[in-house]
Length: 324
Ligand SMILES: [Zn+2]
Image (cartoon, rainbow, N blue to C red; front, side):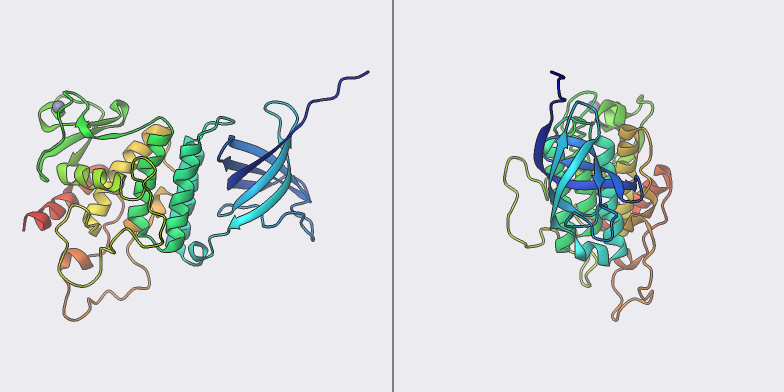
């Protein structure tokens, strides 16, 4: 009696990371699943005039899926896809769409094939859910990056010096060394002799550290309500003094630091990194400040993207704002 290949039906929650046409009627898609890691499936019939699945198979779809796998490393056969969230609000805005797509791109880069990393799935799903609810785009995206690094084994330590293990309590203006290869930051005393490191201000490290637990607190403390946990930083009024104020200059500084960490970890720069909202000047927004004029730090257009050295210079402006 010929032996038949063993097949197994698997159900899971999944985010569509990417999909491409496979034949006239089918696609090959890559999913980040909660319990089974990153998997590739063939979606037969997904391109028919009457598709057999409950949603288009494309990024920005979260769904319950069922697939059949026959042997290890073979393409799975997608049998069911029932959408849970299509992120309509995200899709309606270019900046949100780019940020959410960037979240998926980073998750894709960090996720190993066929190896469960449920924390990474949760980090991405939480970030997309918050972006859908209207969370601050830059803050939420950067918080995701820190959570995604930690959940995939590349935790970046913003609390203690990577050299002497002292707590990083330097002032906002101090110059520290950001070293992705060391998984953290060197304090002012240790930074001098460190090679292959970016310069980063104490204020930026403090802001990233505060951001790290803002949306994904340690343990299971994530709030379940729909309130925005992040104050909008560009509202009219007094400039915020806290380390969490996301002025354009600080955002650029934090963005540059995370770019260095993410691109070093992935060994390439994410394709969407140049298009993230915080590094582009606002489009279609009046350049004239509202009356009365708001403080200049809050209305200045976001600095253009650039290497870390340029961004460091803009960090000084942020420090001055805090000091003043
Ligand atoms: Zn040190």
